[in-house]
Image (tube, rainbow over all chains, first blue to last red; front, side, top):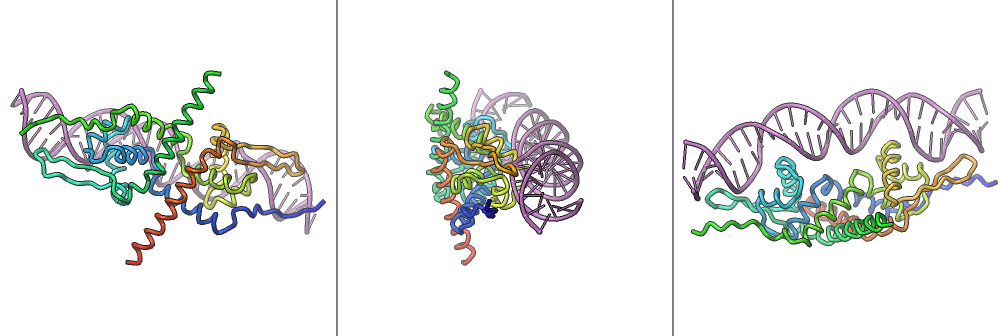
Length: 125
Length: 125
DNA sequence: GAAAGTGGTTTCCATTTGGATACTACAACC
DNA sequence: GGTTGTAGTATCCAAATGGAAACCACTTTC
């Protein structure tokens, strides 16, 4: 019997290393429980205040919303504008760069919808 | 001056609620530092052993790999087959259902590659 | 019989994450 | 002058996450 050492050559290709690195890069910006929710909300309805977001995103608290928004702003995915209004308001919106995530987030939502359907189907059996 | 109460009606639509719920559903399966890496690796090179994955995925340890694989298997995204070989080998591969994540993961990788490019560009300035 | 390779589990620990609550500060409304 | 609404910050705490190292059981190779 041959004792070939098969080292699973498949992913040793540079293409795949780049791909894996890319996934890591992307997730370093997008990880966390709320990032996709916030981005998804801001892509749908632009120009929302802090309290708007707090109401829209079910379950999030002020601390997390504040922190996640700062992260996203720092990475230029979300912009924050302090408005010169009477009781000072702040407007959050998706940046042009943030919009490049639209197709990704659409895919995620699409997959999530199908997933829920499949779970319901299984439940019926 | 009118004091209209604008309650940011945008995302109150059922469409958006479904969308947000879907994002939450999807992330409940895909959250964690390594899920996308593992799925991405298995989509590229099917049929990999535990040690193969450990080598392919840079930085992961045995505990996390073991745990994440169990999660993914439980959700039918990855299959685990114990082979009847001399020093017992196990083969992990992506399931048909797991393959429905291909476009999503491709999008993620694509975005990550562009992101890295843009960071490098900024660095040059 | 020791080393190396398979596929993990277990234990311990530090860091991260995230939730609840309280609080500030300002202005308008009543 | 008390309540409401805006936009957060601060603090405390619990739970989840994740890494390092040791260990197990088995087999083949040296």
